[in-house]
Length: 348
Image (cartoon, rainbow, N blue to C red; front, side):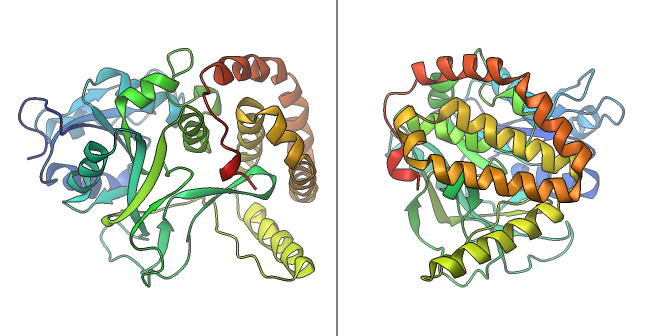
């Protein structure tokens, strides 16, 4: 039963970073409290000192542990604080706008127990528009993949849940919205004591972690028998690749335009910065050389579209990033020291 009992091999530390969750929080925490087949400890980490909710929420859930903050440090830092406070063999990172079916954790823990190489796992995550409503029948994420130019995409996102994404499948990584991690794997790939890279603040920090887990020899997979629900404001849409190369390029540019135009300017710039940071940190030189043209093409396309949408912000962000390059390259050296294998088979 969730939130009770001593720690054992099937215990899970559930970490929920909080930032003005509103009506989403109650369904999220209720789903943890009603989890079956595992014992959970719930860590609630405030990331907004102006609207703290963790202490009040914890008072309504037996044994939940709240953490307050003096500043908004971002999702990555909030998640790290909760992870570091726990000791359970497994860690679930759960978004405040996500909720779980009652057997979600038990199903995924069983998978972890059966395969010690599995570093992260997720269920099939469906999209939900309203915390009190029904799911809309669309996929939010069935794991993620890396596409041309090192762009991460959520597999199946926006597509109808018609069974195409059912079953057990290995993927590059899983979204941090409802990801179960093996604690030993997180400790193995932590850099400077950080599981998620706090320089990312938010956006793509889960992809960066997935890349490091892969490079350290761990696998990742999705089990559709475990189901969760998530309301996503910013996504990594899946890409369909027609056989005609010209048609494929046209669709890619059109999709990229719609994605960039729909983003808040601050999110657009943060997402670009973190994608480039992720590549510079993790990509081995041979893989970079092989895909350099694609990477440069995507960077050029993103920059061009961003210049049309927000010329001042785009130029400022590029100038600011140049000041961070030395820091990123230093992080690259520390990251690659922990890598034991290439992830080339997962890269286009």
